[in-house]
Amino acid sequence: MAENDRSIKMIQNLKFVNKYQVEKDKLIENAPYHLNIIDEVHADENAHSRILVKILQYQEVNQYSNLISFLKYLDIGENPTNPKIHAEKNRIDATIIDDNYAVIIENKIHNAVDQDEQLKRYVDVVQLKGKALNKIHVLYLTRCGEKKPTKSSFPDYLRDKLGPRYKGISFRHHILPWLEEAVLPKCRLKDRELISGIEQYVDHLKGMFNLRKGFEVMNTQLDELLKKELLLTDDVRNNYIIVKNRVADMNSCISNLNSLRDSLKVNLRKEFLKKLYDKLIEDDTGWQCVSAVHKEVNVEDTSAMRFGFKNENYKYYGLFFSIEIQNRERFLCGIFSEISDAKKAVKREIQSKFKEKGVTMTFNDSNWVYLNLEAYVIGDCKPAENIYDDKWDEIFTVNVDGVVNVFYKNISKVFIAWKEICTENKTIDK
Image (cartoon, rainbow, N blue to C red; front, side, top):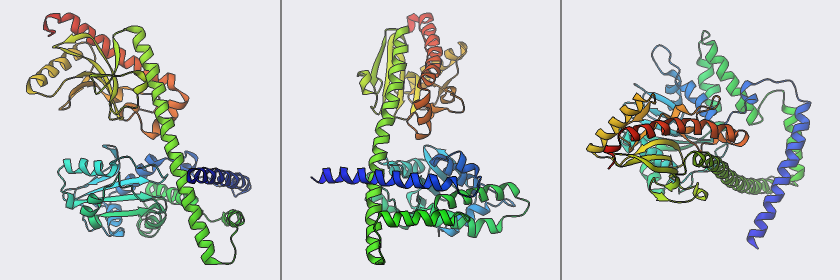
């Protein structure tokens, strides 16, 4: 019964949102002319992270004045000395890595679902860079402050250890007022590009929060529509309860929609991998679907954390050709081998032999000799760094065959080189 009530509420919420959006679209047609580049390109979470990082990277007389202002505004008691400020590095939305402290910023402006152990993993990554836990700050950045990290993403013990170094902040109540009150007023007149960029971003955020001047009439009309639909009265306390409950219902609906979206995302990647497998097996019947390189599975298991393909028809030093989407992120194509000093020497040799064939392979302290992730280019996209990243959803939706062809072409180039290496060195196959 409870599940049925939940489904009914979700349908009601979707109808409510649709009615609101239809009315809003009508009002926008009669709204004052307004041009904001960020509005027009429909900035996603990654774009917001890059914009924030770009603002923080600004230097004035060898000082990171915006970063200093940011840390002060959020009451983070750290002083920048030699900060490295990055967006989307190590899969973290934004990071500030300095000599004596680090700041992790997780951006949830569009209410993306928390991944299992997401914040914990990010803290682990920064610790591996040599930062002690007591010098790491975590900022959970949401749209309006309503979203909180799940315990599966951010375990209680880690929250307790971080203490006040964890902060929940928002674009509405922190980033926007910081930019307006602390950054723009202190920009130098000669910094025209910085001023222009920040003004556009401030205007974009104001549009997101219905704060733009000139749009008051439209926003008032939308408020009246909401009041009518929610049956609000003159009873302020009761109105608050009604709106609070509806927000909770809508957040639940959004959570379900995000889960559905994630499921569809997995199916889009499954379609890509099935088509890629079909093309590979047309050329060589030796391809086999695997999980974690060795465990044989079938093509329906594409959602496995380390799904891929192997081909054992050609071996060198007992090693064979493998493809793996590592932890549902990086697309690795090349040769896998367990780490050992002896195997490191073999992998260096393999890397050298690939180079002789005109194929540049990456070799580091991982278990792989693999094709550089930037080799897979579709337009402006380089999806091999993280196959499941939201920002690649569009290319998997509208051009999956094009994506398959790019990956197939690169894999074939490496595989042909590998076959030649193995054929020329048969006596070393053990």
